[in-house]
Image 1: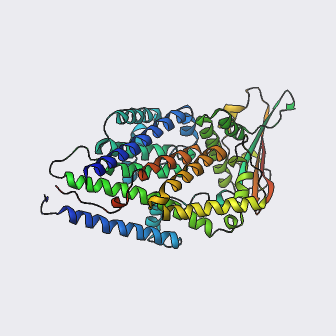
Image 2 (image 1 turned 180 degrees about the horizontal axis):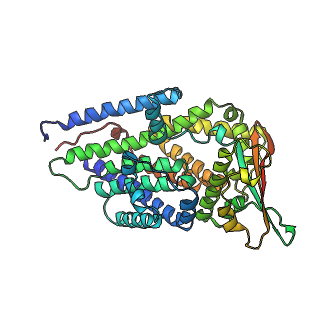
Image 3 (image 1 turned 90 degrees about the horizontal axis):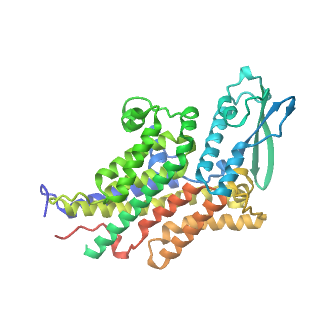
Length: 171
Length: 271
């Protein structure tokens, strides 16, 4: 039975052609990753139609760590790494909410680091944009006098590991 | 196309769709406790024009994102109960786009893959049936199933080729990085691998990702490839803590279930 004279076999053929076209473009993009079909179109294609590649070397060679401590009654507490704690607790409890919280916190401080990339050493609070509200609200007791935040980066490349301190903030 | 093939494809389509819906339900529930923090610290920027149309549920719900999540949850639960159909498929894909935008700060590749397959899922359905076009619906459904299979193959091929051209992956350094970086290791299952072990594991991963798209089409290799893939992704869940990524990939494997060599072509229905 045809609709408006369109044979189902013709529809199959059209779909097959579109299919081959899609696979051909995908293979082209895979073999020649620098290829561009217009900047915006390529971006959309690579992000939404052909996701990946996953676990690229550039994304798995470093992680950023945040150490938080505060001063109460003149004494500094032992630094804690709340993001890592959430991550580890996820494995202990297999509660994905902890996994997501860990990712959110990682996003918060990674975003701020990238925005403040120019500041390489210790910085004064006035020159630094920091979402103190989140970490203070969740982890720092209300009676704390001062807060210290240390951002460090662990880099593991070619079987060698090293740590760098990116920023130290006290307020 | 014979009836058994049609029924098998219907079953696979339903299995894929409903497993993805269930995954989304769980995702919403586990994100619920932190959605306020996400909204306050990583609010999505939507823009104007066509983007505001694409992400309309997000625009309308702002800033009460729990409303969006509750509505999405209700649609998903309802869709779990009823037959898969075009309307719920379209709604779920549309809402999922907004949901992914909302949670972009905690999203990863699994969200991209999930949305691709939710889009494909729209066409997997043959409900409601149009008496004037059922054979076209079946053709489209078969094509969507094949597209899902090819999409998985391309994902592995892309990742495999990237790793093959990457010095850290070829040398095993990438595996060493993964096993030594803090946010990529399960503290209860930490592996200490030597350089040679990293090298071997690295090449096993590369070979799997390159072999899968080539071999999964052949009956003899299909089940072994799928089994290896499931183990591979369970490893990602257990050792790396990327639960969402590992699970989505395993769920998407359902597109390969029951595939037979005669299904590889797009077939028209004879009335």
